[in-house]
Structure formats: C-alpha cells, structure tokens
Image 1 (cartoon, rainbow over the protein chains, first blue to last red):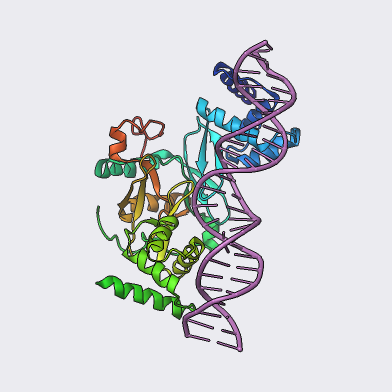
Image 2: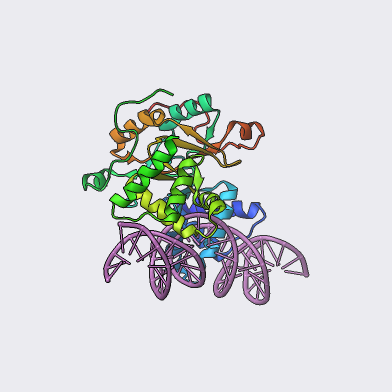
Length: 160
Length: 160
DNA sequence: CTCGCTGCAAAGCTTTTGCACTAGA
DNA sequence: TCTAGTGCAAAAGCTTTGCAGCGAG
C-alpha cells in the first residue's frame, strides 16, 4: 500500500523541518492521506477520534497548518465558513454545490484562458485554487433548486 | 439627481412588499445608493452614523437583507470574512486583491465561455457573482508580494 | 390597534491564540 | 535537558437571533 509510504514520508518531512513526530500527528496524517481527499477540519477530527478521541480539534488545525507550510497540504474555502483540506500534489479546482454540499474537481487548465485574459487586460493575477466555485450540481438543478440570478443568462452583453 | 428617484423607488418597493418605511431604512438606502457601490455592512454603518449615530449595525444588516430579498441589492464575499454590498442592477464580477484590498470590476461576459464549458461538461451551474475572484492586483505584483503557487503556471497543458 | 422595525445583548460558526503541562529527540 | 506539541478554554471576526418596546400605516 503506497499510502503507508506517503504517511511515512510526510512525517519525516515534519521532522526534517525541525518538528516532532507525535502520536496525534501520526494519526492525523494517516487519516488525511487515507481519506477521501476532501475533508474539513471537523470531519478529519471526527475520523481521527475513531481511533483516538482525545485528540483535540486544535491539534488538527495546528497539524494541518504545519503540513501546509511544508507544502504537503492545501486548503480550499467552500464559502462562508468551512474549508476543506487536500493533498497538494493533487492539483485541481473545486466546484461546490451550495445545495447539497457535493464537491466536484475540475482541471485548472479549464480556467487558463480566462486567467490569461484577466492577467493581460487587468494586470490581475488570480489565485483560483484557494476558493471553490459555488453553484448547483446537476442533480440539485434537476430538483428545481437552482434559481436564476446570474447575469450570464441572456444575450452576450459586451466584450471587455 | 436620479439618485433621489432611485431611493424613492426602492423605499416604495419595500412598502409594496409589506414592509414599512422608517427613518433608519431611508437613511441606509440613501447612503447605499449614494455610495461608492462597494460597501461592507460596517462601512455602510459608519457612513450612516454620520447623519444618525443611533442606527445599529443590526438594522443595517436587516435592511440589506430585506433589499436583497427584493432583488435590489446583492452581496459578494471577498474571502474569509467580510462581504460587500452593491446594487443588483449593476451586474459585474469582482477581482479582490488579497494584499491591498482593492476591488476591481470585470464584466460577466468574460466568464461566459468557462461557465458554458462547466455547464456542458459537468452539468454544474456556477454562481460566479457571489464570491469575488481572489488574487493580486498589478501594483501588489510589482511590489513583489505575489508568490507562485498556482497550478496554471507552466506550459499550456490542454484546452479541456 | 397591529404587526413590522429597532436597539441591545448575546449567540453562532469556524479558526486562532494564551497558557501550563507533557513528551519527543 | 530543551523546546515543540498538546489539550483546554477563551477570543476573534462577521453575521444572525431573541426579546421587549416603539412606531408606521
């Protein structure tokens, strides 16, 4: 199982950076790597609690923070509150259904064109990976939950 | 001044919807319409306080909420915390510089292509207006504050 | 007169911080 | 030993809610 190797490598990275390998860190890292790839801090804590209920969510946050500084983990904001964490080597953007909470992954290349345009025309460098794209997934649209409200609907009204 | 007419129309909309026209609402609506177009609830409250310091920020939130339900106002999240409010008839998306806080407006048409692609390929309906696009404005990039980290950097890897 | 609006205080939600104690190397 | 990590409690930051009194219509 390559997961064990990854867990091991990650823990050793922590140590190389001057940190220490502790039981809580080991369990958090193992759970994160073995998990679905998209976990909030709270979900991660819940899963960790199945093997060790005494690990505090503060420790989860601090460990995730340490991993993020190592470049092993990234976090993505889904909207108002929650953020999710995923392994940094898995580069993708996120579509977040605000109705059912489902997260879909899309390749960054999809936005390359828009991103280039924004850079050229506005001189602005976007960081599109740090916030999910909000909307409605297919099934929630079919349930009639997605209203209108987007200015995109209608005839193309300008060209920048 | 067309602003007075807009204020008046907005207040009457509130009444048509079963609401009441009060001094606080009048002042909040007037300040919002006369304002820069991008105000946080707190900024709006500050300006309103110049003419009436006793108006509580809770009232500002509730009035903005009422206006939003009428479709007169939209709010946009800039990131973790703050949201900004603007008139709904002014359709645009937002670029938010996470370094200096500057907000730039871009036409929704810019994203029409990506949006269509996401709809066609993922069946996902994005609501791109509800969250700003985060990044670094030109001047902050020139100050050397914008780091790397975006997966978009690198050879154009495909067109999806 | 009624019911919506208001101000105040307090709660809510996710994440961060202060502090004393524990434990890795 | 020495310093990083841990658990707990509390705070932080923005927004919402409960409640009693006021006032628009």
